[in-house]
Length: 138
Figure 1 (cartoon, one colour):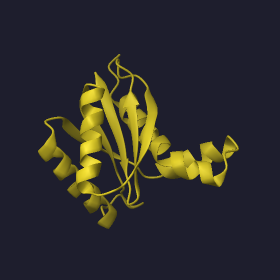
Figure 2 (cartoon, one colour):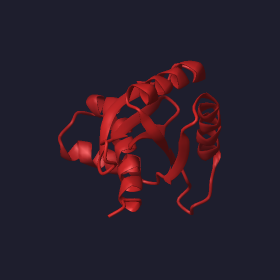
Figure 3 (tube, one colour):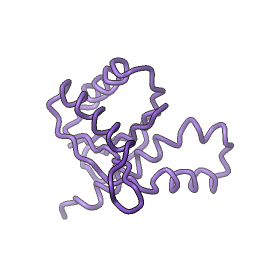
Figure 4 (tube, helix red, strand yellow):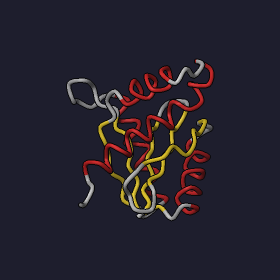
C-alpha cells in the first residue's frame, strides 16, 4: 500500500511517498504553489501515477497543541483535495519537522539556496515516516 505524504505550505508543497510495503518514506519532490486548481491537479496526477491508497498531511499545530490559522488553511486545502479524490486523508502533527529537515540539510553542508528547494519535501518525508513508524503492523 503506497501512502502519499504532504507538507502544505504557503509557497510550496513538499511531497513524499512510502515504499510499496509502507515501511519507509522517500522524498519525491517540492511543488511550487501556483494556485489551488493547479496544485490539486498536480497532486491528483501523483496519486494516480503512484497508485496512492492514503494521504498523510502535516498539520501545523502550535507548540501547545492548539490549532491556529496555518492549520485552518491546511484543513481547507484538504477539504478541496477530498472533493477530487476518494482517498483517506489523515492528519499528522508536524511540529518541528521543518526544523528537523533544515538541521539535516545543514549537517549535509547543503547551501541555503539548495535547501530552499528541498526542505519541504524532506519535511514531508519526516511527516510520513512518523506516521508509518507509529502505524507499523509487525
